[in-house]
Amino acid sequence: MKTVADTHTWLGTADPEFLDLAIAEVEAADPEAAVQRLVEAPGLLWVCSQRSFAALAQDWQVVPPIFLRHICPIHQEWLLSGGSLGKLSLSPDILGGIDPGLSFSVQTRLFGELNFKPFQVNQALAEQVISATGAPLEVKDPQQILSVVILALADGIRVYLGLSRALQNLSNWAGGIHRFRRDPGQISRAEFKLLEAIQVFQVPLQPGGRALDLGAAPGGWTQVLRQHGQEVTAVDPAELDGRLAQDPGIHHRRLSAQAYLASRPGQFHLILNDMRMDGRDSARLMTGFAPHLEPAGAGVMTLKLPGHRRLQVLQQTLSILQGTFPVVKARQLFHNRSEVTLYLQPLQKAD
Image (cartoon, rainbow, N blue to C red; front, side, top):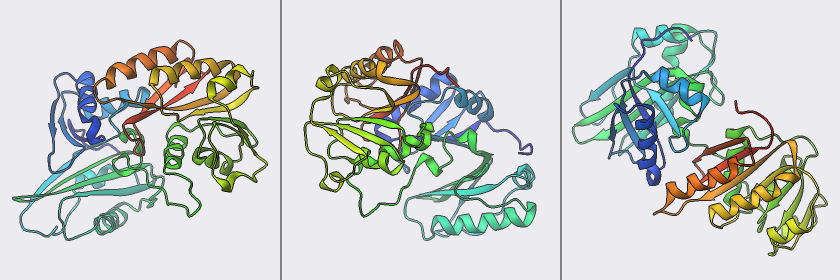
């Protein structure tokens, strides 16, 4: 990407339930930062840093925050009176900062009662970019992103706009919101959690791999694994959804996870755990299964966080896991609910 004037103001996104922890992550990275909650936009933070957006983004590419899902810089800002958007014109600095050799996308988020839709903003600004630079438009996997946030306020319409590389934003989805189309054959909403984790953590799913799904019932994660070509051992005393019964690639073990561990299971390329249990007990269970994970394999688990002891449970759980798994990554994903998703690797070094 060409050079665009760096900025110290930016927007961050988090689940409103975990906004306090996201703010703590910002303050840990820059103790002098001024952070403001935007009450008109739940889950959105306005930040003025002592450090530049580029410097913070570079640090977070190496060690991503857990609760801060998405960040984007602010290079232009307007306050428009009246109820209509009017004509938005990209500044010469922003247009000059767009690399014509890299794909781009416009990502717009709207908050409040507005009489236009995100796609209208996207289309209008994309046309300006293409006309001025000739850069190719790529909505799904862009290399550079023009981020737009528009808020309906009592005194008008506030517009924030910034240009960044997709890698800098922590997520190449607008606001870190991963959208998946609901399939008529979907067994449970939990499938979205695993689909998002596969994308975010780039979970290795080798053809014909052996996967272990702990606490599998009713079978949502098992179904996703089968759709990705995995042979699945599904462990749960409860029944699986009837649509999975005739699948020869699914081996249902009607045992508790602890009983199955005692039966000396074989080796797996992937071990998953979405059980509703205390996070520390769940972590101990995963360390017990660690010898059954292939060296090039991975583990995925969700960690339920109680409202009054969230940070304590998270830190204790990570401490338990890090004694066994050299790589432990944690993210509060869009499809998580009062939980975070953890990604575990047995031997590989951290990125």
